[in-house]
Length: 415
Image 1 (cartoon, rainbow, N blue to C red):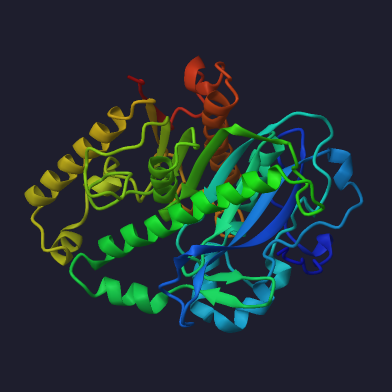
Image 2 (cartoon, rainbow, N blue to C red; image 1 turned 90 degrees about the horizontal axis):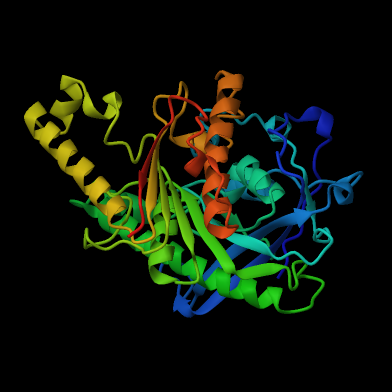
């Protein structure tokens, strides 16, 4: 089922996002999916099955968007606001401030536009959001990637984002009660995280199957008919979505490359798994900023009061950090397809949420620095997928070119 759009506000009243740097315009179509093979454990409705929304962003001709009404930035937010607390809305945008629809940016996305002319088949990327963040809070990144000739299937994973709106008007919120219950148990958040990552990875797998089916079916609702390259599929995600991308690669061999944008489990690993030896075989890219950080001075030098709260001595803490560093490095080095680790924590203003639009929309931050940080990360993201899905051997991953001297790239060769 297709999700209808809402009428956007006049563009003059809204702040802009960074313009996409590629040659294509961006179209989007959305689908409601139901996996009848999986019951929905978090639904209050007896017999419910797993539902999700898949938003497919795809390349269109630049001229195709001229004079066309563009899609709203956060479709469905107005309908969902009554079911989201003011605190959750504030947190959803932090460090930006939500001050009503007029504070939201415009997009360059056109609903249901014809795909770019030609016979070129585009690589596909699966995208998974972080906890609490709707997919659309990563609009700048998704627009930019698609403008370089990718189809991105971004999944809204119900109960793991602040709201998922379905075409029939139903809105599902974050499973706060289940989350709070897990937090109160010893190591409960670890088990809950692993459980949700498994659900989200299975969502990805199911959505990919449906997307490839749509690409083989001539339909008004499938603008990318015969235009997807089923042999060139990647997965990426932010925070818990990064863990989801890693897990997707473990369970689905159709995915040829995966990227984790700053997430880690409790062992310093980028993989929520029980066996520290288990990794995927595909090429892998790990961003290290905050959640995945076991390396920077911030991570290595907690205050005495912070140590006291954790009931740790400094030698005990140092030992834990060293073990986590060794685990993270060991797992990256064990990936058959090779891997990369990019440390960005030395860039001023780069935080965990810099992978989303939240820092780009925050007026109290240095906007020029936020834009710079965005472009640094985008350069490496595109380089990784261009290399492994498009066969480009002249990216910054191979050339030795310095994008920013404070961005530290490590390469673990394939074996």
